[in-house]
Image (tube, rainbow, N blue to C red; front, side):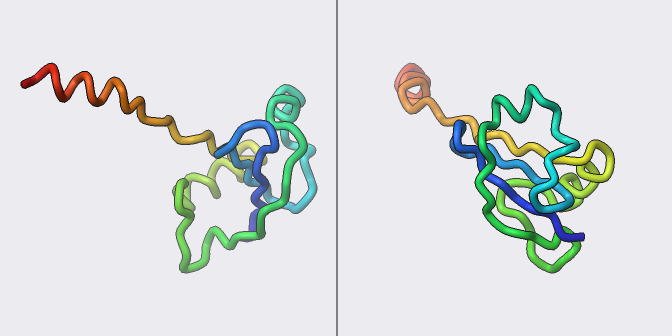
Length: 91
């Protein structure tokens, strides 16, 4: 199954996967508002040999079939200061 992948103009690292290119009808209005204008990235074969980098192909496929879309949230950034504090507190 091919899906269309879009990135958010508002939030770096946020991606939207949908079944049909430019068909945003399954996306709730509140999500469309917070996502901003979608920027097309590529078409991707979820059942092909390649795997997505930051999402599970099977999970994306199931979510698209269940709700019409899959939303990939940005990875949580590591707080380097907190990591440093924890590492120095142990010594």
